[in-house]
Length: 493
Image 1: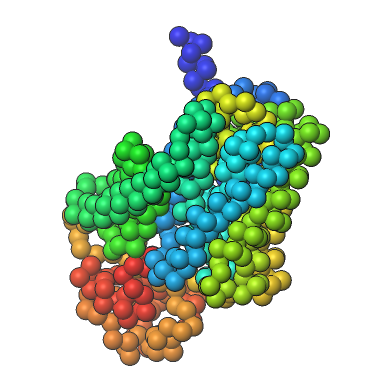
Image 2 (image 1 turned 45 degrees about the vertical axis):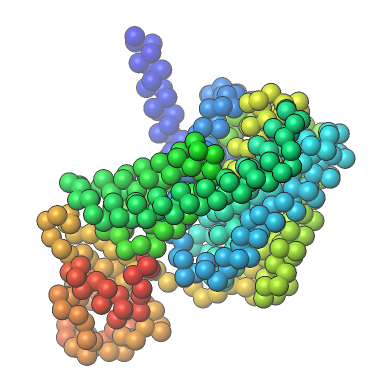
């Protein structure tokens, strides 16, 4: 009993240390210009049996379960924070990149994998499928807060949020073909359309249901609403996957609908999911780092094969996929070049690489090691250079403005009021006007103004300046009218 308790306390201590180090790592990653996911993976590798020997972990099934749950949370947060008005203009090229682009990447990488790994064509296609998609966790983490032009950022985020289902479908399809060698091409195509179509339908239905439930069900505590929202993300994935659909696609679509709806406790839900997604990223990448053994990874054979395949992926396959998939769309060659360079690989290929290990395919361990090396090189080389490369190409936009946030004062069941935090941009119609000149809706009160880091007490003659942060008390009945005045739509966050 005492020994079991000590083991439990030891695990709790390790989790606490990993989270603390993981959070601090994000700060260092920004200064070093290295994506945080690389440092999380390194932390896991150092703590593993080939490193300090703190934790021995080699269970691919457990890693896969943790990875899938983490991907659901990360995709959900990414969908919540994506504005439909931003991605709508780039929906077509993003979907082509997420489907045709993944297929082109798979085929090109498969040819090289067949030659240098000495595997069959089906096994080469399997390897290509595993590394075929860009990674939502990596892309969301690298682009968050960056000032890359919104059109390009939206294309990358929409692509990474929707191409995981394609990669997972191809991976499972090629595993079935290798193991069973009897599934026809027509049935495979049929399965693809069923998975995508059903996943899309479930995502739309669950997104609408979740939005309705969040607004209509009066919970006793505001802190329950984020948990309520997360439960719909997990439910969406499970329903879609259990019935043969694409759970990951369903989650992203549901999150898009929820995030672009007018929600009660919106800010609470968004902030909770942002922190939760970071925690799941830390956990997932550390677990994946524990799963790999550096002694097997950094061998001459794996390094050479990994470098050749990384070169193929970054310099040949990804650009070819981008330039072919965006034919007919008005992307300049500079924009296509940046889209090509920003095709980050991350957790998804590593998670997918556990599938062959679980079913016991030949070369499964070799595939996992090489895939892991490809992900590391992609994250290190591409992830750390996206922003400087965008600046070099002249594809960075103006500094991102802090969006409208809703800070709930009290439970909706007790009062019908919110505090709005709003940063005034230079184009806002209220710039240069004093408070008495602005025709605010009824039940609206400016509580405070933050200007250049200093508190300004608002009076009737106080003039609004660009970049002021306003704290506004407003009744829910006047919310839409206030947002219209401030130049925000009800779908903005």
